[in-house]
Amino acid sequence: MSTPEKARPLVVDQETVRDALPHLDVRGALRQMFRSLGSDAAVQPPQTLTLFPGGAGDFITYLGAMTPAKVFGAKLSPYLVTGSRPIITAWSALMSMETGQPLMFCDSGLLTTERTAGATALAVDELAASDAATLAIVGSGAVGRAHLRHLASVRPWRSIRVFSPALQSDAAACAEIAALDGRVILCSRIEECVDDADVVALCTSSGTPVLQDGMLSKPALVTSISTNVANAHEIPPAWLPAMDVYCDYRQTTPLSAGEMTLAAQRHGWSPDHVRGDLPELVLGTAEKPSYSKHAFFRSIGLGLEDVAIALELFRHLNAQQNDA
Image (cartoon, rainbow, N blue to C red):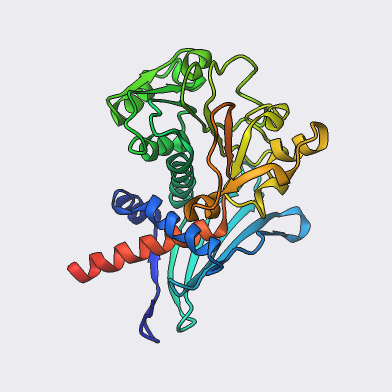
């Protein structure tokens, strides 16, 4: 991708991002990115944490570079200590690999939610049984709703069950969730939501398991994004040795995901037991689940995902300007 040497970069605020979201091919952008990563045409460096002096907070830098698209970039996410609630933001810088010039600076808050749900949708597309008919979503916040939107088209679901304790006393939120898809069934108990489901998408901020022994009555694909709590895990780590385990990127996820590190420490599981990651799944080199037992997909998010979704936004906004 090229841009005039003296062209000013786009500066994109949250409202502009919100208006653009329905027009972005998130899953397609991520599929292409993971194909590049699996073909050694993209680079995913480790994320870095930088502490501010005097305990004033920190910021995390998420990096990535994609040769086919001729872009590289970074997402910066600060945590700023204040006298009350901390300030947490995220902005991405998209740069040209051809000119070295900035292409765009954008608010990444909404984009992070979209790329997280998009990565789960890509995994479900690759891993779920072709005849999967029942989707269960645990969680009804922004991430849960994004998962519902992105997963709704992955399979011809007969039903989409949703459970969240927050919905029990919020009629307006229930109406909003139900309006997202006509197949939605709101459940009052998590057991009712996940029983006999083919795919269970966990979209909570819980640092401890939300699924317990006996809740899943048949082999299912369980997906998890978890949260930033130390060693956070939405399923019992003891389950992993008996599951077909997948992740977004085998070079990073097993060393950070709570249930994986705990399973390695306490239950004899090893990162060597990961059956495949998204680059391998997209390239067709990973073995798919047998569904003689549960399958598990865990993502922690990648800087390359942030670069890929920023590029998709940049292309959309450029096309919009050209059509004006």
